[in-house]
Image (cartoon, rainbow, N blue to C red):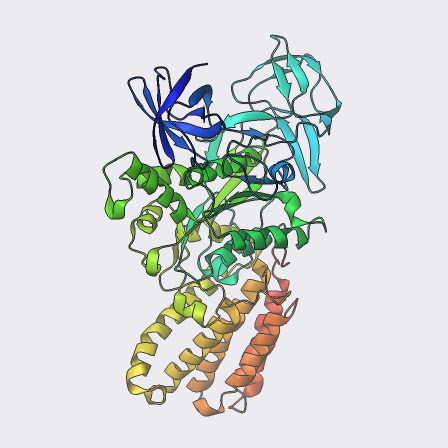
Length: 603
């Protein structure tokens, strides 16, 4: 362990000498208060340190202590339900010891060292174990069983196995070479956790939001960028995904967000009921909090802390959703530290390695076969909110994210101002996972899922072109079929793609309900076009009644499917034939699978 002195301080950066053996990203303690920091540059015996805490009052000549290890997070039972800061300190423990404000140099272990967990071993003495093997189980929460894993890099024969009540620091097993295996182990946050192999995407990440699941699906293990200007609902979208998405574990990172937003999350999440267990949703959630009033340098570490925790539960075989809100604040921290290091700036002052760092972060998403036995498959899906200044999607952070993300959910301020939620711009957004997820939707929901999706996308595209014409000549100058298309597309946007977060039947939508509503919107246009072809005037089409029927189906917990298209023809010719056609479609839909095997809040 080497001691040195502070020789220079510039904001969150400090220089220490002599530290000739310092390693890049080595963890150090700075000053008499023991401020936490990382080495970010080594020049001879001078180390430049990025301090993760407020450096106010730091003086020249104060001691600097190198720890000999990188920034690490303790992984083990007790993470679920925890609220930790950007470097892994539990905020509840710090608040109990220091009050409402974190004093510089505060120290607290991530996991409670005094809490005892009931460990049930799955292996006996004499068993040969390797990295990733499941030693046993701890029931971390009523809904999540915590698999105690052999840490990467460890292997051998079990010489002793202990069962019963243990703390995270006590050995639960010993190898013949004397290596102690515990309920928890530490892992460097900047190093991806290893896996046996990566699995191609196939199963969708069901979000409960119709516009996303239907038009822009994301595969489990995929990555998605969610850019949007101020007030477009990025935080609300991520919170809705954390509440309703089909994931076993949720890791929510508040990176540089306003304190009042995170306070709302902390107040609301414990009150939410998990439909799987009937208990608080916090029992399967980890919150990583680094608000805008906390030191900027710690934002850079917060994303790595969150993704490491998510990989840990992925290795247990769980489906994990990581919500990063927002990546722009993380990039701003990189820019600030880079400027203090006098690095050559790139576009808009961001460091030239921004794209490389963002790519490495997104590459940690994926669906994998975990190391060790028994065989298990886990997935880590990354949803990254981005806050482009003025909503400009051409700015560097958004463009860097689009190069590596598999989907784009662009938020439109015009839709947000119209109270259309989620305010997803279907003209800009895209997904590269639609073909990969189509077989799952066809097998689990409806065989014609892809066909319905394609027809609705075509309908929305045609509506955009017609709106431009109608704005010039007026809607009354359009042909009847074009007027019908505009009205049906409007109903589709308002009643199918939009959802109400205040309606318990509409806040989340299962794939089966999403399909029913989408098909009803499609059939509304089909039946109306057929009525026009038979000579029924546009004015006699009962579009108002059709809208009301579609709205009733949306608001119902288990909507019927035959009423909407049957009302379109209204008093037109041969209404009975139209109704029979719609009823036939509804009967066939009732025979299709309804998303079995997808535990979901909206099901």
